[in-house]
Image 1: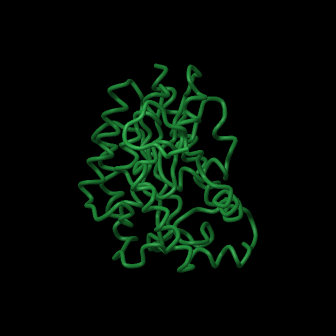
Image 2: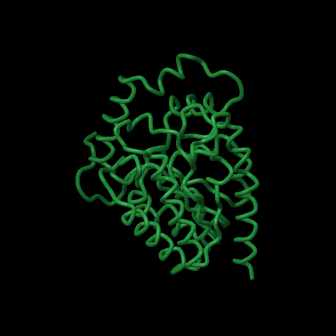
Image 3: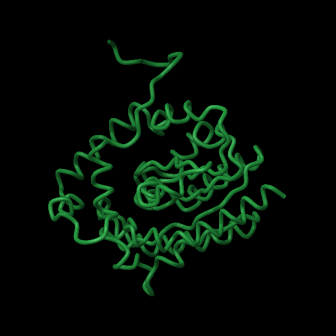
Length: 266
């Protein structure tokens, strides 16, 4: 059967993360020492090259990963949704770390590796179309890494503002998360001072939440050490929280969502 080409009437979904990716994420989040073979993959040149090869195919065939949750969204048709989490790998891995958070009307629409621009492109099908009461929006680390090319702080803030505008135009409340701290970017070692970039961007994110009357979930404040890096005991790679890291995030997200849902009901 020929692959679809150009605009077609219907497309199948792409099914979300691979089993290999899920296996790695579960091992990463688990307590105790990680299998050294899996740990080595974090900086393995061949793995990084394969990641880039797959990313290139993704950019060429479905740049914003519109198909990633297409089937999941179709299955939700007509069902009430309270909260949609949209973001990158920090968000996507949350449903593995704390699956109970994504029950009873909360759904996860994070995609590993995504920048804010990709999230904006899929904001209509993955957030607005689900008609949630609240959207939990967190992004930016992959913008710092330049996953979809060079960008600027203003570009990031513009896309965040665009998603906020879309949500508010459809009566959806917004919880805005700060960027989580990074110690470094293993897949983007040429990026200069990512730690400082994240800290500077969070100053802007906090100010944006204040100006626009948003509920802020300050994850950086509870994950960062005194130097602004991700606390060593809460990460394996300096970017992604472990299960212990997500446990630290839980009171922050619970409080933010409680407030947001109360406001939406008022």
